[in-house]
View (cartoon, rainbow, N blue to C red):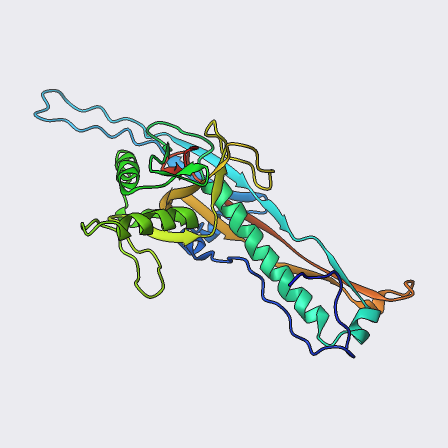
Length: 304
């Protein structure tokens, strides 16, 4: 049944609002690194790094000379994260059968969460393939809907690329599968009785751990061009773009949201409008980024 613009008023119908058909799954964000409170400044978050120049000798025959361990420093500036404002008029408030102001607040928060999720994925995904630092590889499975499926061998190949990065903490390996790649793996698993090391919950279909990878899933993650370059957040799709699943090494990430401000202009302060109105939007300073360009990756659907 087609939807029409506008809202039903009190005389016609009881308040029944449709649920949003959008995936707000952002649980992977909890795995991102948290900054030390002392490093949080007004301009951003400050980092120091010592360059490890410690050597190792076997059967040394000469005296040792101590070396100074030097360091590097950087500061990651805040990003401003905002929703666009919504206004509500007194006329609407009197005529509608539900509390529109309350519902608008909920929609604002839902939009903010969805926006932060997209922002986060775009910040942790590699800009493009960087050998030995941030691998970006393509799928090789059978063709479906203009792309090649992800198959188990691709996942093993990607796992080998990540292992070669020699990341120290095995508990920090996180891989966010997009929904099409999860479906690809379920499809392949259903076609064989052979055991391979990925599990799905038989009730919920939720994907579980794959060796060291803590597996998360999302409707969508990052998109790459046909040339293998990460699409910027909010950019329009072009021919050859494909979605990716994204790997991140948690110790090399930082995520922090400052206090979320609800910016609200009360209706009773509007002394000029014929139909007085209130306005609301959400505003905060936040930060998600790579501490260093090492320990990230993407597995991208290849074009058919």
